[in-house]
Image (cartoon, rainbow, N blue to C red; front, side):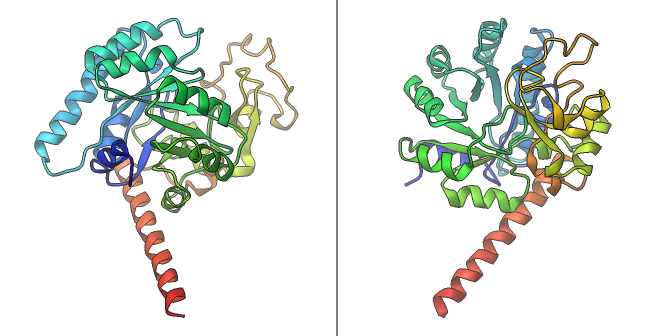
Length: 325
């Protein structure tokens, strides 16, 4: 039997996808468009600057989704999620959580540290917590903290990705956790979403595909680079932030560095020339080679749904033929 939280979320969705919160790129317009298309939309709290802007942005999202539900009462509209960095370097975490508590944000995504002190606070207002993990050890810590769901950030995912194959990590975590699982790692097509479900995940976690959307707060050059590149154009390095991540090689070339010969560790000189990670060094996953156009979010999700349905029918036909044989 599906987990009750999985069942309740699937009932609000047209495709089992949670959009990944992307630093700088995700904004209220993108979140609303994602939810309006039938997938869970999300954004980092830190994208709202200054901190007081988060209250305004959450109101904008809630008002937009409320108007959508009122205008289309029979249309599935999923909840939205807000991401928090649970790390001592995030000095606005408490203020952001208090803002989310006032708005009773339905889904909270936590990253970079076990969310022990966050889970109880979110549960007090009825929210659910999904935590990013890259290893089985991280998953155990998150489960011990009482999270409601896990997000498996596997090899090939954009940004701060892990190194484990989704086949390996998902299988190991399913042995100890029967709750909701989102799977990420080079997922950019509807076929990939279906594969994630077949492997035992409840949702696919997609970020890079939505960088090349009209609503995303990304430079046009960045969006076009997503369209123009392939998996071979991704470099995995800790050089820019101190944490290993996947980035687009062409933008590394643009700042005068050789992406194939970067130091193994973060260079303290990086940033001294006003170049900044994430603003000037653009993250992306290995699935970029399957992204061929910049489209409105609604069209992206519609295309994903068509690919998902077509792949499901193809498999069903294949299995039917095998049974008859």
